Amino acid sequence: MKILHLSNALYPNVMGGTEIFIHQLISAQLRLNPSLRLLWAAHNVSTFSADHSLKFSLELHQCLLPAVHSGGRVMQVASTALNIPGFKQLLDDFKPDVVHLHSFSDRCGLSHAYAAKAVGAQLVVSVHAPGFSCMNGTLIDASGKICDGVLRKRRCTRCRLHYAGLPRWLAAAVALQGGWPMSAETPGAWAHVLTWKQLTGEFHAAWQELTYLADSIFVLAAWSRDVLLRQGIAAEKVHLIRTAGPPPLLPRKRTPMQDGILRLVYWGRCHSVKGLHLVIEAILDLPLDASVQIDFYGPDWNDTYGQQLLRRIDGDQRFRVLGPLPKEKLLPKLQTYDLAVVPSTWLETGPLTVLEAFAAGLPVAGSNLGGIKELLEGVDGCFRLPLEVVAWRRLFIELMTNPRILSRFSSPSSRQFSHIANEMFSHYGYSK
Image (tube, rainbow, N blue to C red):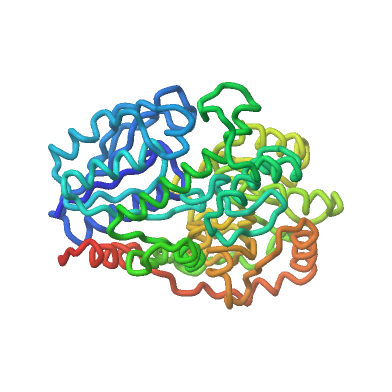
């Protein structure tokens, strides 16, 4: 069998959750069958991007295709490209039995799905994030409410415009209209606002078309499956394949606050949906002499959100921003802390960070949302919190007062990527 994975970017050039997942999945697939023919492809970016420009040599089984030729607003919203250079040639040369899409954009979207189906390949889609079917990318509206994911053109238009900065009443008024006599390609801010309902329809239609074309759709959390079913996607296509973590290390030696300091750790990208501001503000609300310190590992501190956070914590020794941590050093480093924090403000489909903490024997405090909620539910010594600064502040005070609470934690057994690979093989129709 020949399997072609396609995504927006390649690992380790980009080290987000999706890229790490694909990297570990491919490694597991090859361990189970070294003779399997596998390729992982992604298109280059058309303009310079610090996050996506090629920084590493390509690994074996990786293929960097030329940049796609992007269309206008409608095509980009509909995850469709004017041209996908190199992809059709790759299909002709490699002749995959399965094309497995891991993103939904013009670099990995409808154009690629049509091309894959045209050569008779089985089309598989893995839903790694809420943005596959939510224009905001979060399934949380501008007022902070979690959405049910049902595709409603008026509601989604209002939500997107409100999220973009329009007053709620104005966003609702624009969403009521049936359409203005102008093209969605008309330049200008107000033209973009007035034609947004048209774009909402294009986005919904593109997602529905992809799910129609797909032979199988993999979701990594129960909440994600429920969203797709509420959208009317055929239940027989949707398969819950829970994500996996790394093998566990030997038990860690550190006891809670053994040096008198509550040591917290966050690893991952710095982005507003990751909720770092909740933890930072909670610690800033504590007395300056509070026995707590948090270390941040990961990229993307140079954008607007990251710079705002850096200004908030400037000169405060309780905060340390330490940059990305090599994968092979991550789990041993985690064992030197008391608690992992995962304060995401959106619906995570894993997240891998929770499973990495479990593998290191480290308890977790995380948002009571999505995949975090599913993984932490019923795990003693872990904490599920609302998206409120005061809740995080109270937790830190409680743990500094009684650190023995953390000793209740015992790492739950977690799935390995070999389990995921086997489950996906079965849906590919492949027997080792």
